[in-house]
Length: 275
Figure 1: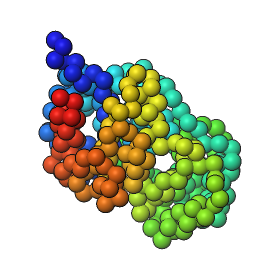
Figure 2: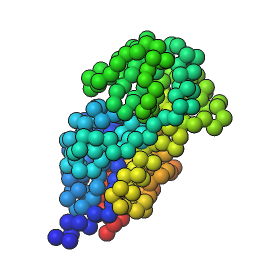
Figure 3: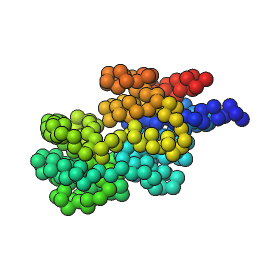
Figure 4: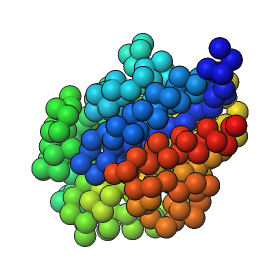
């Protein structure tokens, strides 16, 4: 019986797209089997993603992990699917919201997507925003003028558009002196801002605190720059084989390509490390 609990003091988080799932956005059987084994041995496993709860629910419920809250909105929240409620939320400050509004007006060709605690707002022309909500049919409102968006509980703001325009948005924010924000590159076609000191890693540490798990027994695996801060924060960082070299340089363990079961590689490494 004691053998069943040998990993009970561990908490591991995984990004979804390009990490847990393969490049076709499907869950490799090897990953599913490894997660079940890890949980059977007492470990806590969860997902850490830029998605909101509605978008990630189907990914979460495929796995035997419904009792462990998930890191959502790139660390702006912790969502408990069992209770169906946000148990932690980090809102962008008034200063941060004003900086987002100014940028939206400076770059009118870029869609601005505001992921709030309970709603997604699409501003601007809306083409990129509509693509953002279409795949998972997310609950949203299209409010063309960003000034008309309710100014409360903004978890993150996504600037989405053609790469050339997004590059200009990124330079705009990076030129600011100590804004009350966290800046994050999520793809060549999107750039995100969150509250200061808010990322997947800070939310995961909050979850570890709630569960009574020491930082040295926390681990995470990701594949892109929006996972960088999370990997820098946890006790045992890992990345997929196809990840940029910057992630490999800060990882204790480099897994195989996501198509081959990168999460399984990492969980096997944690089990060996424990024993």
